[in-house]
Image 1 (tube, one colour):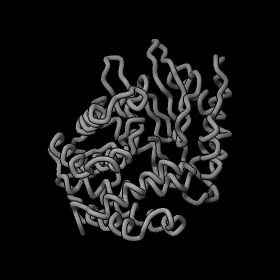
Image 2 (cartoon, rainbow, N blue to C red; image 1 turned 60 degrees about the vertical axis):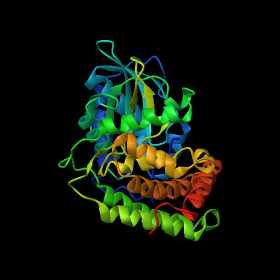
Image 3 (cartoon, rainbow, N blue to C red; image 1 turned 30 degrees about the horizontal axis):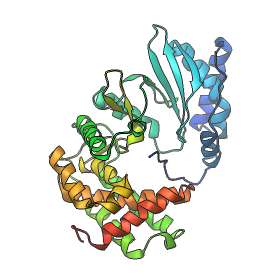
Length: 342
């Protein structure tokens, strides 16, 4: 299930804003190099709308020249744009030696998303995640290996899908103390503020007791953060972000990147598939994930609680009402008779 970052209020572009320098750099590059592309540069509408809401029209205007500069600097040919996301311009690319790749240009929104993604992919080094071929943090640009269809499109049943995702998560986990990534504690505290703000707009969609339970879980995860246990985590694992490799396995794309307890990744798996939670035994699902990965079921459960409410409210705010409402129904059920109470 694709998700997007919560929106922030657009801010005026100050003098010396990176966007101003970016525009100058790509304009200069475009004068020296023009590419006869086989596909016109077409930005998907969701990316256009997201950029407009984020006050990043300058970035949209600069995209053609930015792509041309990367084609020159990285000796790649950029093909058709790929849809499905809202946070970046993504397109097929081919390197000079014929390797199939994907170019990703992250929409600048002031929260270092490109740097975090690049750092995560570098540290993962192709284990559990797509291989990073080239990167340029200043331009928010990544070139990654081209992968196939998503796990969501594969038609797998629930438990085989969970096996694949849990195993991919565990492949990513590794020490990353000096990575500069945000911590799990920072994310948990952010989600507390985010839920409080959005619930005031959608309070009829979820009961206050369910919200309070999720907030309590988030605060406990923030308090439990330990640098000794913290590892690199992908932080947005779901079936849409697992793409098939040519060898038949899968690799994760689009990491948010955190330095957190590993259970933070598994809580995101509990957030997904709300219908399974509503029809099955959520604690059995939680303990299954814990046994498979050697992690703590209580921490998984608590991360799942805050992820479920925060993402459900987010989905309502962007118009994905059916899935958002299903997540919040699952949150009510989980909070009504929790195996873990505050």
